[in-house]
Length: 256
Image (cartoon, rainbow, N blue to C red; front, side):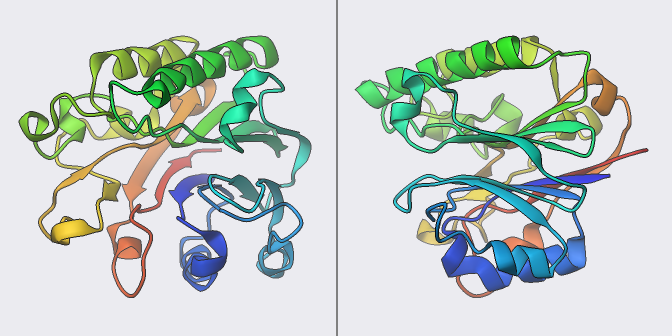
């Protein structure tokens, strides 16, 4: 089974690129973030033509998350069902085959001295609580998406250059670790421990070509799935070309 995550940065604007990627990468499950499309306007037929069922959580403005699956979609839940949902459409969960899948878009945080940073930490705490009340770490569970946190210094092009900014502070990393400690494994990092492997590059200043990026798009799996991971890839080719997302898709292959 191939499970992928991709911050598409506006699904309707990049739908041809997403369709092209699906046709050659053939993920069984694709989690998407920053869809920026309402539930009513979601292009479900385009995905159905490729053999995928979908679940979306979006209001047509910012944020927005979705799951596309060719192994079925059932028991869909949109949001936490708590006050944390006031921060926008940032979580959708669905059972795909025999795997419980969550597509998440963690708040950016903006700046460390802002209320948005505090809200980001609270959102990650809510994610941990949500998993604890709705899932079993011994079951097959995926939490995938744009976490807006680089887990450690290996995941940043130059830790000194971004020190003190969001995405790399110790409270953010601690909040992410707390989510993982519920019972999740960073599947990509389990396979590839080296530095210099990034999934996001700022559009500005040619950062992609300068290899100035961060790894903030994560596939977190419970142990029953993580122990069967055999391959993973950050598909840099999907970040190239005309009008790409600023993120590359990431996928893992899990042995049946």
